[in-house]
Image: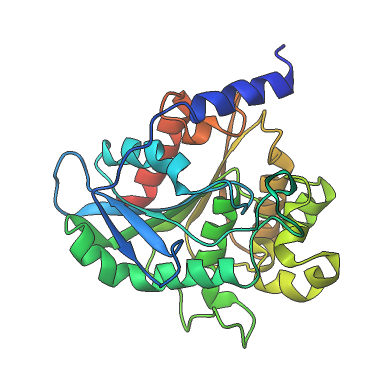
Length: 289
């Protein structure tokens, strides 16, 4: 059997080996340089294409931006989807890059941005990708982006008084979360991404107060169709995190689909060269059509 760390490194190298794919259009949803959405038109030129809104992963950390997800965005566009690839403010530089303090995400900036991007999307997409059908939107995110996708779909059940709460559910066909950091308690217990959840929350002392506003497992049921795709060999965000979220949904009276892929780790889910990527596209299509 391949050493898990070696498997993970090889899968990461493959996922990051593809050249970046430039968008067909881009639009700002705010004044900060990271408040931008890149758009990809369906390559077959079809009208009324479902719109997939992508939220990239990278443990909410600064070195990982939307660029690494552009080959996946192009992969979906070549399958007939319109795609919106969302950027958002992330954490500070890593210590070895001269940074200091927490490095995963920014509170509340990361959440401000995702909320603002989703709110601005309907008006932006009309001009950027007129082929998209705004009535058929699927949110999808990988890893930390999977967390943000689940969170964005649950804004209508945020605690009263939350600045991100919406009066009703978003007009979504569904959510496809790929190896998401979906259950904070389990992620903290397993030290997922070297303490990223606690860094995102501002430290252990803030987790109790901020968690109910940010933890997808605490924001159930949502009433929105949700599917989770997870590699069984994932050592970055282990299977137990996805299972804890699915269990929390069941306890709340909601069924969340869970697709477990044998022999697959963390990165093949967004790697156009991997068979797992086609599985992800099919999960999206099942919700979109």
